[in-house]
Every structure is written in structure tokens, then in C-alpha cells.
Image (cartoon, rainbow, N blue to C red; front, side, top):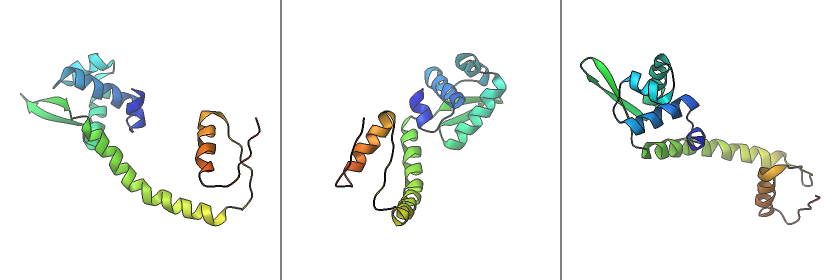
Length: 131
């Protein structure tokens, strides 16, 4: 479920989407029991998932049967976000380059910090590490 959060889904959205993948087309009450959420929460959550294009529904006997979209849709959503964010991050990089001083000291901690140091080594000639 952590992967779904990284893809931009909330905890409730993840629960509902996974429940729908397990159940197939279902009524909100059934989804509610499977996901462990209140039925009203399921309706609110399915509305958000419909807006994201991850859930659809059909009317059957004046009742909504919700169904999960194919998981490939998540890849499309991530790609759309990347396409939107890429130019923004590029502009931020340009600002960073303009204001950066030639010599600097940065402190990093943990695995992500170590990863950042290794990535920075590709851009600089000298990096000193103190441990």
C-alpha cells in the first residue's frame, strides 16, 4: 500500500482501490466492509478516485456499482505529474545555479543523504566526507 501512497493516493483511496481490485464491480456497502471504512467515507473516496480516473461506475437498478480502472492508469497519472513538474523543477534548478556559491559545505544524514552525496559527485570534482 506504500507504493500507492507514493503514486499520490491517500490511505483511504488505496484501501478502496485495492478492495475494488479484489471484489470487482461492487456496491459501496460491500466496499465499505472489505476496506474497513464507513460507507459515507467510501462514497467520498470513490468520488476522488473517479476524478483521478482510477474508478468508474455504472447504474444498475438505480444503484452505483463501482469498478476499479486498470492499474496502468496509475502510470499515466505519474507520467502526467512528471510532465507538469519537470519544467517547474528546471526553473528551480536555474535559480539554484544562479545563487549558489562556489565553495560550500553541506551536511547530509541517513541513506537519502548518502544518495545525494553520491549523485553530487557526478557534478563536482572534489567532495570531502567526514564520518
